[in-house]
Length: 420
Ligand code: UDP
Image 1: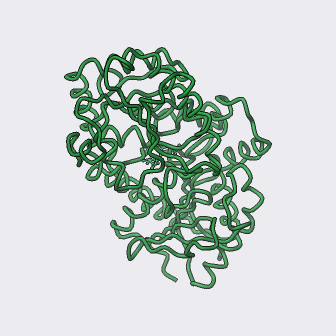
Image 2 (image 1 turned 90 degrees about the vertical axis):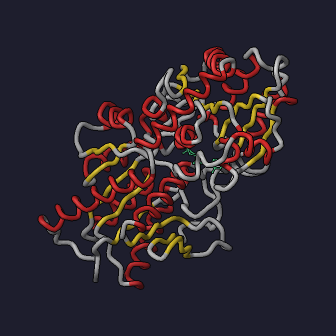
């Protein structure tokens, strides 16, 4: 059985082959897909395992000759919120092992994503000789500190996150801030390496403002404030709406607030969307606001391209792909001063940072940038430079590939007694 350069990426709830931006599909799905596809281009055989959430979904999606998504049946073939998925993980593990057996597959490296997959990786390790790399995407210890609602699964999650940090061969932190959180809030044990998330620097930044506005029907004179992302309370969309209503522009200029992402009403994120729409009405921004809904990969560059500024008002953000997508598109970012956003956005150079939930600070930041077109352009150019230097997927995948190779080499030096 050839395990050389064969890797499994596990992402139980974040299907890398699904539409992004609605329900719970966001940065993790993009990360797994981009990492998988980029690694395949670097010669790895990549299998990405996820949970099947609709009976009509294909079991296998081939992204490229060496990269595929494999959907396993674990629980109902329907959307199940991530906080309710833990009970289905044993079924996921047994389906994965069954798939390996049927296809005579063994993986020397398993890269798990989010705590649910961390558990899957730790279970697999009990039966197989493999090296586990893990990316958290979100840390329970940080998340629960920024929310009033602590779900019943919290205790289990915190325990799994600690065990994984202490036992995985390597943890990939996507920002220095995330690494610091792990050390302060999770454990002093374990091997952590910082490799950031990346973005597609060819796709983002490829559309000029005039081309983008022509396509979207936005006048040249408009001032466009953009949000892109899921509808989830921790994303802080309410702060953005209140900030725009407090900024000096509504009424003075042709301001457009574009809030992109989210499903149609009736799905799990519909409640937050309805709540945001109510606030938009309440603060009198209805005539200035549009909700284009979920955007696909081809539409996104036009929305970024058309914007004057992109706002990422999250209460907590482990990395925040949207910030680097906007930056790659030469758009200044105004973000909450939290998590990975403190790493990607350089205040006064590529955008501005504000305390989370502080609508007045966000309003001031929006006013500062929109009232100075020259500065807006300078910030955008510096943002693009920063992304080119630090956050291209190709560069990120090269760093991951190097990490896998060195960990696989270590495992050959210290062979395990376990077999599949
Ligand atoms: N996204 C998308 N379409 C949408 C909304 C969001 O493709 O309608 C993508 C967005 O471009 C980004 C990801 O979803 O790549 C969101 O990632 P981020 O890390 O910003 O947030 P998360 O969803 O992980 O909290």
